[in-house]
Length: 398
Image (cartoon, rainbow, N blue to C red; front, side, top):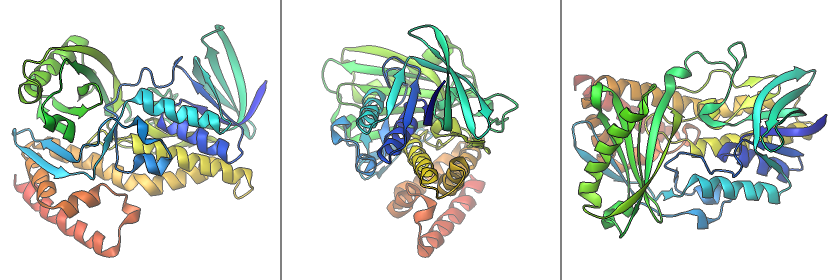
């Protein structure tokens, strides 16, 4: 049976970053990727935080646009804007493919067409079974550390320590159109990230977006729970019509459709089972208010690589345990709060206006919310608590 020090399942931002940085540290690393081309089937608006490329050593050539503005559309129909920094847009094909190429350049092996099936403990090691799509054979690999980073489609058995009863309730059915225009849209379309929050048909909460790309506009939406294909297309077609009237009226276009399940719930309580750990969206690392998860995924991959490299150097016995502590300390406070906030807002849609007014009217408040809690000074914590108290009072009265 093949043995490897570090086995990664999934080559998205989490898995690719983990593989790249672990291999760079001298860790023997193998990635199992189900698709034949890395990133080819990812459905994502692919918005990146300011400074993402520099932080993770990704070439700026993958960036399509640098929108400096976020526009938030409340259920009331009001639009609120504030500056971002600027952010960046790309596609998952380019992002994931580039990170995978960088991982290979560091010595990581990436096996495509490898469909993860299961894992089991074997003393201090883990045996992973997968199907080789090319040969049709079922194979096994013995690994010292395993990172599961397959996104929202991660398979977790009910009896596993990784299982989370609330996972299904956090799944969002999504559909996105890539709209290729015969001529450019209005200039403002390429300067703005648009997020729309509203009640769709049947009174269901909808989160929709418009992100500009180099050669198309990514326009999509997500609805919590399972939604049929025809219902989802009907909802998205209505939304696209409203965007068209503002940004590209009467321009001929072609459309590419993409759809799958994403995640918008609270992060998983348990992330490790022996030396098996979850990363990225598979761990529930998604901001429920915006759907952002690429930065969190890449950071989780970095933390996993650091933990595995530390174990190799004899700094600790369990890479998975160290990784879980680091990840929860870094992200869980903010992500749990964002999930609670989204639930609070959706109970009374008028509360969106209250929050968006605070963000648009206070650039400092908006800027701080884009940072991790561990980066705040005492004075910044005081300012945030004051802003939160003011928002709560106004939102409860809305």
